[in-house]
Image 1 (tube, rainbow, N blue to C red):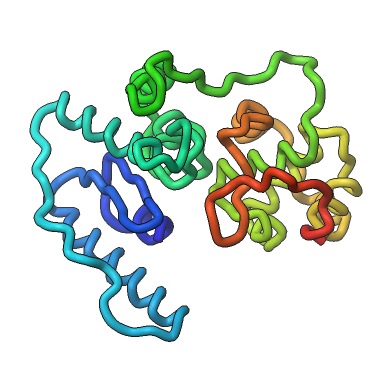
Image 2 (image 1 turned 90 degrees about the horizontal axis):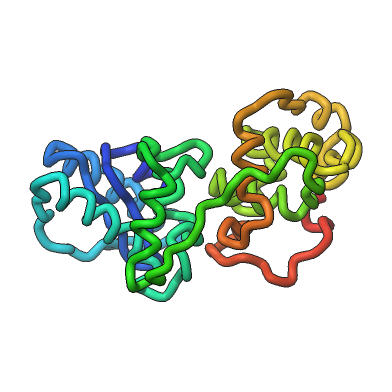
Length: 248
């Protein structure tokens, strides 16, 4: 559903919930592309489950948003929806909203980064539904810090790319990013990174990233429990996860 939404209508904010979706479109012309994305998901879901019939309930007419202040308040409302529903303690902890994207903490971003991410996150996370003190955004570790663990890097890449844990071993940009990050940000060699992910050492060697701004993002969020690894089939962190047998 997420992939269909971010590839379809143009929007200002988005939150995908377990049983509904909030979308703030750029203008009325995007209602039709949104309908196409919803129908596309419904067809895929019915085919995958061997079912037929309606998937979506009618949610009423779209609400017109007027004025800059109303636009910004709506963005905050949408980003806070997972917190108000009790699904996340911090807007950064919900993978499938555009709050991370607005702060420049998603790969690839689904929307443009706001001009002042620190101020924006303080405003959103300082809502009473979260905590009036707000919460900090991840900062880059100081140079010469302790190398990250493989588990922290795996969780960071999973969270930033919105890729479930098992899918990180499939050929593609997320796996390449993971292999490069393991080699650059942990004590693992190419051979060690290959063993962790379950690929040949030559595959790991070809994934070398060198100077890459994405490594800065991975380093920033690694170890932050708001950026937890995505398990197959849900959005929850795996609290007892240890070892890498399932990645081989």
